[in-house]
Image (tube, rainbow, N blue to C red; front, side):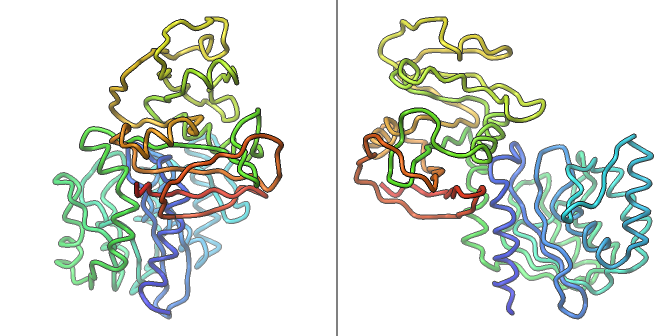
Length: 355
């Protein structure tokens, strides 16, 4: 196995949490022990929680030592009155500072001379999580392989910190793919990022009520919870009467909604108007900032193809394994697949819109 293989695994893990880490970037990390055995492959999952590197390190240490694992669970549960357990090799979202400090104080050199593959240069600054580069240094990692440079002036410098401590550092492995993973984050930092989301049946029907399974719809609700604005077409609002909330997840934030319509008159008994904690606006010309998701994207795909949605470059398609009676979506559009995964029997794919 070569560096590209291991970085590819880290990339695939990070893609599972694309957008969900907003306003942080999606990052993946894979760890090998000194003999080349994979110990863990993890990603940053949500802003405010443990970053990819300490998450991967934590699971690597758990794999190396049952005592470390048991001690961490006991200490974490005592500190936060929680009930985390190892279930299918998952802890759930972890408070960053305590977890970081526990690793630093209890690693027992179990990862000395280990190797880490990280899609983005480890951070070197103190934020909600202490610097990831420092953790790799303190645990005695022998080599860190990095995909993308961190261009953020505040967070960058992790590679230099590691090199100055005698850690071997290699940059640029699968750089183009790692940079593509970062594209939404970088666009957001420079003013905003927008993407289209659409659900299709196996035979290409995009209308007529619920299409995908609950796992897919839950993922959509997670995306809604982190975006700034959800954009929906006026025809979809009138026809489907969607609620556009986050009811399938716990403590989800209901996004503000913009209805894209030439007609500004809507029945205010429509469900989306009654969702608490949100603003609903109607725009004839879209003026978007921040992180925005277009839903009911069939009518928006044509606008994107025509260049009328200049900032929309990506498309997320959920596809059911079932056929559905209805009109097929029909459009000439060139797409480049970026990542595919599954939610039960459904599939989902991120695409770049080429024209």
